[in-house]
Length: 254
Image (cartoon, rainbow, N blue to C red; front, side, top):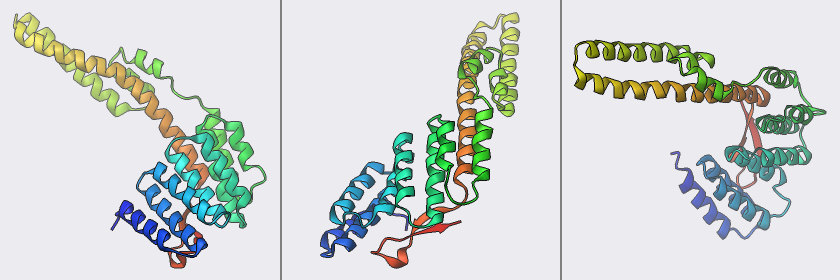
């Protein structure tokens, strides 16, 4: 039913009632997974601590993976890279080591370390040419400068166009032009009440053009980084194999 937090509570209850240490660790891990799916990374990490305390060493790879994903969700790129590297060392299957290397590379690229991202892929199994090409493409091009977007935004629409948001650029230019035309017309007719209202609205739109140019640059950079990290990580994603609960086994989905 998608009630992740409720599921996590039930898994915790099962863990507390379970006499077998390995099974209890598995239930705690599943509680952590549900909290992670609900966007509660801190609660997920607490459950992972409980899993490791109850079954030390039994869940090394699943714990490392989930800690890495939690760190990514919290935008702690350094911790994410560390945990993916840990997963790469603990994994006993080539496809899982490849997955870990891709995750480590993506985390390092998000941290601004393109060289570290390339190094993370070195020696990893699998076909990683597309991932390496994504790193090279991202490193070869510069990010848009938010301050430049703001300066160009002094001319309505130009800040948006700088970051490739041409529809917003045209919209900004048209709206600012219409309000300026209305201000001129009302001033010529000595209709100062309407002029004042139009001036207030135009100032709002004009300052919005400046700040919009700044935001557009940030959005452009984020989209570019998202595209690169998506290509680095590839299509497969890990999920727990629920058919084997409370034994924790990971499987790939495509």
